[in-house]
Amino acid sequence: MTEHPSLQPSIEAWTQSIEAISELVSPLVEGEWNRPTDCPGWSVRDLVSHVIGGECEALGDPRPIHTLPRDLYHVTDETSRYMEVQVDVRRHHTAPEMTSELEYTIIRRSRQLRNDKRDPERTVSNPVFGQMSATDFMRLRAFDVWVHEQDIRRALGKPGNLDSPGAQLARDILLSRLPKVVAKDAGAPKKSAVVFDVSGPLEFLRTVRVDEEGRGSVSKSPSLGPVVTLTLDWETYVRLACGRVRPRKVADRVKIEGDAELAGRILGNFAVTP
Image 1: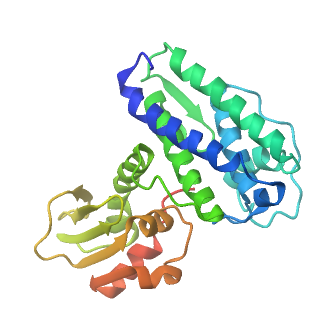
Image 2 (image 1 turned 90 degrees about the horizontal axis):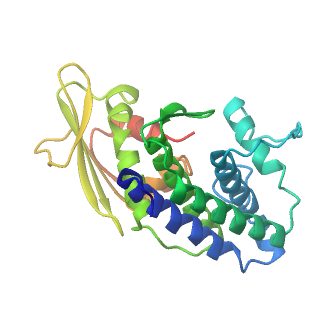
């Protein structure tokens, strides 16, 4: 238990997700670590390496000194190049090396979170996301770990935790980014509403309203005359919002009512994670 109640929900979500990852990968034989995931160029091993690397950096460990190969097609910009270092440096680690490092990293990071007495509203700097409060950084770490837990589950064919604390935190983060997707990126008309009806383990109905100045906001109240209604299941929502799948690949899982052209623009801009 942390001394700061504001951090506790994120820490609980992070703990459940990262321990779930450890449980998922501990029994894997060597070949299973190489299974491809929805993240381009990354295997199960690579995702676990990414999670380990993120937590090591949160612990303040020095980054590995490592030169990336030139033929990594999925490394396309400075952000992906930055993230790839922690992955590529572990690419030839054995299964026991991976599981032992993951377990040790969880122990170290849990201890740090439990004993941290610093102000949770202090500013921290992240090379990918910039400056933010420690509270917001912890929410993003919990979000990142839950999303990668789901990536690993899909790769291994072991679904679960779609309604966990991490899932609920992910829902709130993804919904907070919907107004920009609908109002700015997709260019929904002023004084219009777009409804998202999501089913599955985590059910919710949300309306994105665009005001007379073109600004979007999310509401729990339904709209009587939405310009578009998108109906889909929660796992498909996550895969689209996290850029794991292209809209045309899951067209049979998304029901569109209303302005199909606007719906296409919304889905085309739906991915909101790096």
